[in-house]
Length: 267
Image 1 (cartoon, rainbow, N blue to C red):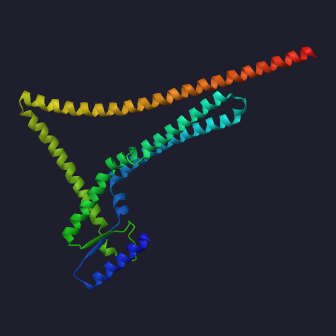
Image 2: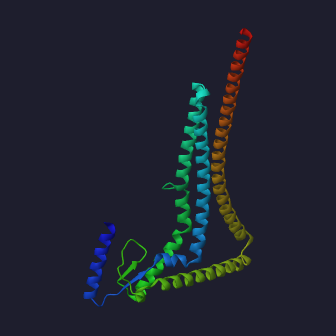
Image 3: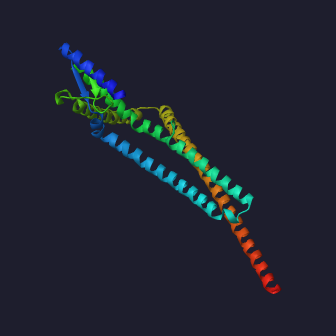
């Protein structure tokens, strides 16, 4: 339904444009543009690596839960009611932890959303800015995205401005890199003529920035350590329950053997 509406809108626009020869249209292929920006590829690869690690962690936790469920199902007949409840509670805790971890990774405000915004969003913004600049310079009335939901029944290659967008972004990035180098050299030259007090203020400012970055990193590290501590505590609890289960099983076997020995003596 959505694509049908877009098709109708596009046909309407094309019809209107055919009646108004003075108007100019163009289109871009966003996928082509992004795949030709090295910074985007690098950012996407970094994001994919993180996602792969997160999925491995989730799969590992999910498999451990399935093992606990299988063990409980196989040994339920020889366990006391208390032990069964303890193990069911342990499984429920692990399932809730798994849901929280999944939300932490892939939730609406999770790590994937934040990291994607940090890595990919600036590059997408560059693309949109370049499109606006080219459209303004070329006096385009409309610029469509070929890779979006908008269905393009026909597209003439001469109206494709994707290559212009890629070139503009590459030029802008080279300019920015050059400006960054100039700014760095200027900073070093300026510092040579500064007083000791001014240099001290700059050093303090840089130190404060590094301190904040370290505090932020320490905060993330603390969260991760806390999560690992919770997982370790749950693992220790699982081992304790396993020991109790084995002790109970052994006690039952000894009791059964004792009964068999008494039975043999009686006979």
